[in-house]
Each structure stands twice: as C-alpha cells, then as structure tokens.
Length: 249
Image (cartoon, rainbow, N blue to C red; front, side, top):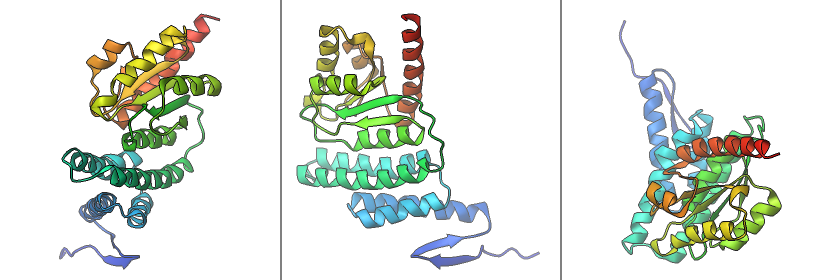
C-alpha cells in the first residue's frame, strides 16, 4: 500500500488537515504560531479568529494558554522592559488579551456545568498597570468553574479588602508585575491583620517579580508561578477555607 499525504482543504483562511496525527499536530502548531503572532502584533480580530480555530479543533484551554497566549505575553513584557514598548501600547495589549481570553473563556465555559468551585477575587495592585497575567489566571479559573470577581488594575489594598468582604470572596489573589509595586502585596497582608480579618480570606500572590520566599515573608498563603498552579492552589485554598470555617462554627 502506497502511503500518501493527508488530505487537506483551505477553510476560512486556515489549512485544515484530516488523516494522521502528524497532520493534526502540524495544524495545531500552526494555530499556536498564528495566534501568538496576532497577539504580539496586537491584532484583535486575527487573534480571536485563531482562538476560535483552536477551540473548534478541540485543543484544551490550558494548552492554548501555555503554547500561544503565555509566550506572547512574555514577549510583550520583555519588549516593555527593554524599552521597545511603552505604556500606551501595553494598555492596548491588555485590551487585546482581555478580548481574546474572554472569547476563550465563554467558549469553554459553555461546555462545563457551573460547579460553584469557589468565589475568587483577583486584582492588580495599586500603581501597577500590567494585568495580562491576571487575565490569564482569571480565564483559567473561570474555565474550571470558579466564580471570579476581577477588580482590574491599580487597585488599593483597602479597596480589595472592602470588595472581598462585600462579595464574600473566599480567596484573594493580588498580582504585582512591576518591581516598584511589589510592596503593595505586603500592604494587603498588613491591612488584613490590622483589621483583624486575616482569617477571613485565603491570600495568593502572583507576578513575574514574586517568589515563594516573598509570599512567606509577607504572610501570604501561597504563590502561583503560572495559571495552572493558580488553579491547583486556589482549589486547595477554597477547600481549606471551608473546612476552617466549619471548625469554628
């Protein structure tokens, strides 16, 4: 039997393969590459188109994030650090990522029964304009069935606590992406202790400048290095928080 190349057709600008797993791998890899390029070029329409393509190809959400969205976010962050991008461009990038991640979140959420896994508040600390990392974590948490209240960027510690109390959040996740804003995470912990509310919430910290040692130093409950780790830790924290509340009833 003579082997032949897998059949292929062009559909809506995409090269779609049928046949061997090698062909499907090529298709998926091309989708990742195209989506990453669209994100780094801040092309919202093309990025959304590639996101829908990967969703239709049944690529898992976490794989899309790790293989396309996260590399694009890291490249933009490096360009900003090197002075090749400026604040207006990073704000535009945040809007592009927010749109694409919302599309993915909506697509994948429709496949899942709402599991009420927990109520999670996320925000970027006061003075920090970078929230692409926060958006990644928010999207993945929602896809895993968590309710997420996203306060946005440059949120004060006092506002984060007030909103968490009113919304009855179980976990607070505070992100700091700039070296100058990292101390704001300690401000949250200090204020929780000052208000005698430290045991009302589990606290997770994140950001490129953050480490497990910093989380321990300020008294946070954990540090997440990426979206997958954030989901795992958040799940553990929610269940631990609920057990503790049951114990103190």
